[in-house]
Image 1 (tube, rainbow, N blue to C red):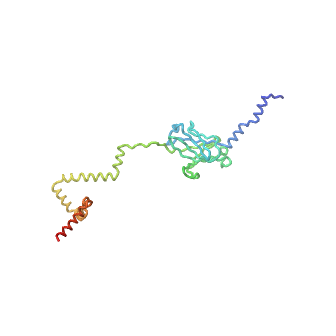
Image 2 (cartoon, one colour):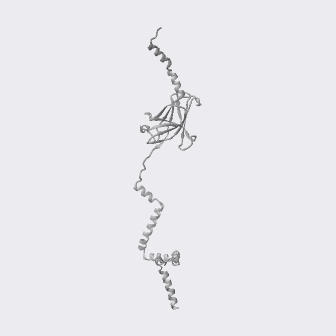
Image 3 (cartoon, one colour):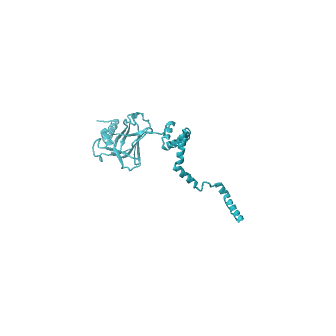
Length: 256
């Protein structure tokens, strides 16, 4: 049996090349697949309205993995190795909850689903310790990989709406200080007109009661006893009061 050169080359390449089953088993034992899915929710009823620039990242020490938004509203991370990651969704219109993703290799995982891999996801908080986790997310896994739903916090707002004139004025007039000032102004401006339009007998009786009011007598006595009531500041600064006192003393000496 004689083999030509092309046949020998084909046979040698076939023997050296790994089989598809062997390559698949090797890839599944070293990496796995994770999909972050955006389900419809009250803050985001239609995830298809998200901008195309939306992306998700998985960050660990010295490594940042990024995935764009797919047509089925998900972020697919292929060939994900074991480790602990920070999952974030970056979007200019909506905010998403950051998550902690722990990918456990088959030797470390407890269950043997999805070819022995295990993925645990928790809600995490910025500025806190890595071990301080929140609510745990439900992870769906099979031989094709793992899927976890991300949570939308709400729509981002970059502008502050200017308040309208009428609601702003109503809020000012609702203040107790402003209401008290308005009532006092109405009383001071309306009382003289009420007194002028009163019946003469009623007006005389009201004035008599005002004179008999003990508070008026006390206030008048306090004003009369105040030594600063007749104090002339300009004369004091000019020194005229001192000169008058000196002149009075000189006149007394002359009279003596």
